[in-house]
Image (cartoon, rainbow, N blue to C red; front, side, top):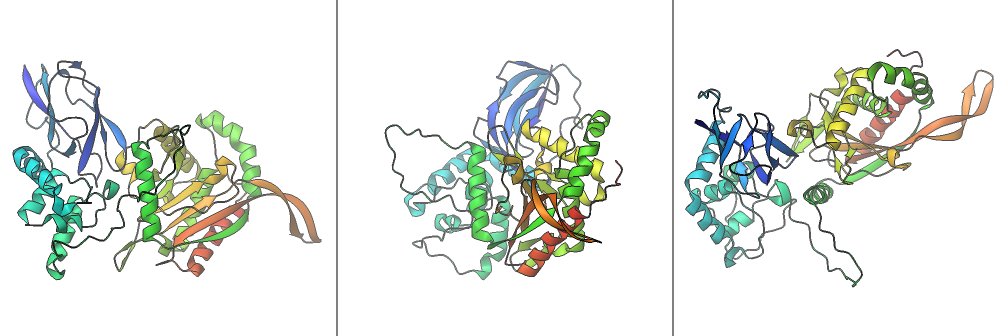
Length: 435
C-alpha cells in the first residue's frame, strides 16, 4: 500500500495558517475520498477538511488546538489508490513551504522560544505567538519586550507573519524599545477586563470562539474609526407593491423566496458607482480606492452570532442574480458551508436590522471598510403626496436607512449624500420592472 501526506489546505488568498479544532477521525479509521477528516478554524471561518485519498488514517501528526501553516503535513493516509507526485496536493508557495519547514524542523527551538516569551521580561504579554513568528523573532534578534510591543492584526491581537515583515521593514527607522519599557496597547489588544459582581444564582457562560472574535473586531473598529451616522427615511412603496405582485411567481419559477435584501444591494451598488470614495480602505496615511464593489450581507446564525459573507462584483448582477446570491450565501452561512474567500474582500456592508423588527440602528464598521448601512423595518405611515391637483395624505411604506462612516476619510457631506442617493434609487424603483 502507498502512503500519502495530507496537508493543511489553502483556504483563501489571505489565509496562511489554521487552528486544528477537532479530528473527526482517529488513527486506524477507514476513510473515503472526500470524506471530512477534521475541522479547521481560520480567522475568517470554521470549515471541514476532506481526505484527498480513500484508505486508512495511519498517523495524525498535529493535535487539536495546534496552529498549522498552510502546506504543512497534518496526517499520513495509507491508500490502495495510485499516487503520483503531481497528484499529492497543491504545492505550497515558497513562503508557505518555508513556514512549514520552520515548524517541522525545529520543535525544540519552538519550545525554547515559547518558554522564553513566557518569562518575567514579558510579564503581562499573554498573546499567542505562532512557531513562525517565534522563529522570525529569534533569527532577527527581536527581544521579548520588543516582540510584545509589535501591533498584531491577527485573531485576539495575535502577531502574524505579515506583521513581523512590516515591522522588520520599518525597524531601522524606529527607536529601540528599552527592555524595561511597557508596551502600549495596540488597536488589536485583548479586550480589557472589568470587575464584575457575581451572585450565587447567576449563570456564567463562556463566550464561544466566534463571539470572542466578533467582540474583538467590534472593539477594534471603534478604536480605529471615529464613527458618524447619518439617517434618511425612504419611501419604498413601489418596491413593496412590485414584490407583492411577483413574489409567488418568482418562488414558483426559481424555487426560492424573493426578499427585500436584493433591492437594497442593488441600490447600494448603484450609489457606490456614483460615489466611489465610499468604496475605500485606509492604509496608514494612504487611501486605497477599491475597483471592485463587493457588498457584504450580515447573516444571523442559529447560535445568535453574526457572519458577513459578501457578493463579489455586486454591481454586475441584475435583481434575479442578486436574489440568488443573497439566498445562497445566507443558506450556506447558516450551515457553516462558506469558504474563507466569501468572507474576505468585502468593500461595503449592509446590515438588515429591520428583520429583527428594529426601525433603525447605528451599525459598527467592518474593518478595513469605511462605511456600513443599516436598513430598518418597513412600516406603513401616513405621508403627504404631491399630485397635479394638490397635496394628499396617503398610506405609504417607509423605512429608515442608517449610514455609519469613518470620519477620518468620509466627511458628513459625502456620507450624507451617499445614503440619500441610496434612498433615491429605492424610491425610484420602476413598477414595470420584469424579472
